[in-house]
Image 1 (cartoon, rainbow, N blue to C red):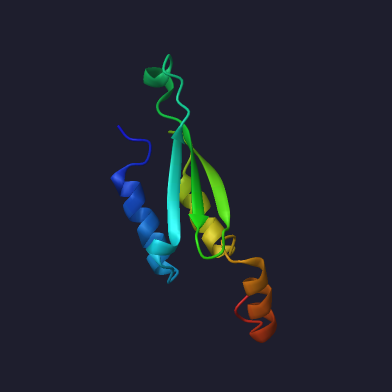
Image 2 (image 1 turned 135 degrees about the vertical axis):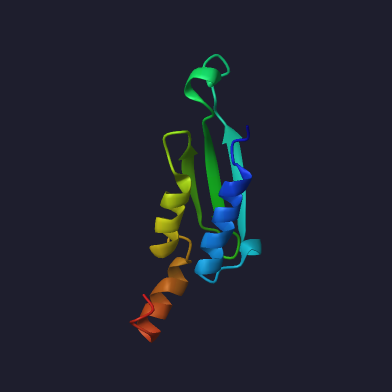
Amino acid sequence: MQLIEQRDIAEFESILRQHHLAQQDFSLSAVDTTDPKTDEVSGLQGELTVMRKSTGKSKQYLISDNTSWLELFRHDITDRVFVGRGNSSRLSRLNPQAG
C-alpha cells in the first residue's frame, strides 16, 4: 500500500483539469509519518505538500484513512488558495465576477 494511491493521483489530476489548471504547474511531496509499531492497526499516515510552481503557493494536508485530502484540495482550489496574492486582487479589480 502506498501513501498516495494511483486513484488519488488520477482524481487530483481530474480536479486540476476541471479548473483548467496545468498539471505541470503543481508538484506533490509526501512524507510518511506512520508509526511502524502501529501501522497495521491504524494504517498509513503522512503529510502531503501541494505546491503551485508559478505562484510559489503551497498547502499541507494530512493523509490517513480518516481524512480526505482530495476534498480539502478541491475546496482550496475553489477558494483560490493557490492563486498568487497579486494575481487574484488584480483580477478582482479588472473583472469583479472573476473573484
